[in-house]
Length: 212
Ligand code: PRP
Image (tube, rainbow, N blue to C red):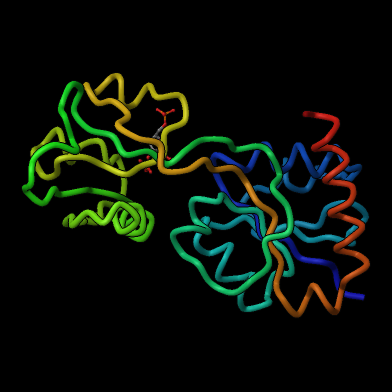
């Protein structure tokens, strides 16, 4: 049978995900010694790991070229799509927050505010729920710059330790929602490779409980 293929998000979640895979007993030496290789066999070769950008993890899982994926809830909320969210892995914890210059009363006044975000869909739905009319500008990174440069009144962004906000004179105005890493699955894979996926999920759940 061909290996079960898992797409992992490169960067912030990578280390914790590999740690989790090792804790469930899979030899991940190929990932540690990957060099420039992009598809890496782990365990006894029954699983293959693919390292990809968060949005691409979802794309690969949706199209079924990867059976499973590990991706942040932030990307899931922003990108949507059709796949199963199987498990909250419990690591990669942070939150989406509305933040702005320290001391400003964001919710006062009637002028429509401008919001900068790398996550325009998340920002839009937050303000829709509040029935607030805002203008949203998409920024690709270091969104904290937008209010500092005078482009926006506030931002909707990921806050982990809060130091980026603090060091730039910004503060959280409101928490939008909490975020953590999730295990997602292709809908067909979940039927076709049910027992393998279920066994893996069970082991991951056990590790998660031990860590709690
Ligand atoms: C994220 C986020 C903030 C920062 C928050 O950016 O957009 O800028 O981390 O972390 P903190 O609360 O611990 O300071 P990331 O480093 O992922 O890069 P990006 O700006 O390119 O999105």
